[in-house]
Image (cartoon, rainbow, N blue to C red):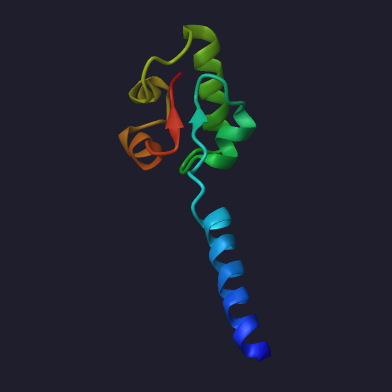
Length: 91
């Protein structure tokens, strides 16, 4: 009798938790507002130095109008943009 009650309950709990924890969309990083620390931590192939260059470039030249403009920053190539394109936005 307990098995008939517990099994469906466990299935419901695990199904709900997978919806809550497994189906959340990834957070996109806005390259126009992110700090160097966030860029360093969240982007592939971007370390502390490159992250600081991105922020410095943004302060000097204004907001990025597209993610491809990141290639104007010394040390950021097409591969970096390509590897991060699903995780960044320029808003």
